[in-house]
Figure 1 (cartoon, rainbow, N blue to C red):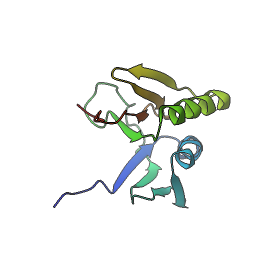
Figure 2 (cartoon, helix red, strand yellow):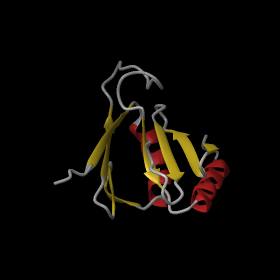
Figure 3 (tube, rainbow, N blue to C red):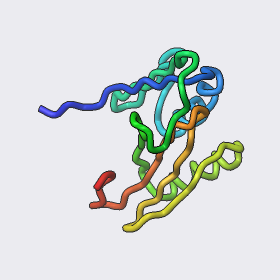
Length: 128
C-alpha cells in the first residue's frame, strides 16, 4: 500500500503577506480555500498556513529543512502563462527551461520558501 502526501503546514512571519501571496498562487493551480489558512486541491492535498514563532530565522536555500515544494503543470504553456501573471502582478518569479524539455517556474513566498511549478514532458520524471 502506498502512502500519499495529504498536507503541508507552512509557517510565516507575516500571515497577511503569506495569505496574499498564496491567495494569488493557489487558485491558479487548482486549489480552493476551505477556510482561513487552509487550502485544498481535488487530489486531497491540503496546505495549512499559520504564524511562525517570533525570533525564528529565515529560510535558507541550502539549510536543513524543507527546500522547496513543487506542483506539476499540464503543459509548458500553462507554466509560461502563470509566469506572465506573476510578472503582471509584480511578484518575483523565475522561469527556466531544462533538458529534456522541462519548463519550470520558481517563486519565493514572502519568507523565501520556494514554490516550483513545472511541466515535464511525457516519460520525464519530476525527480531523477
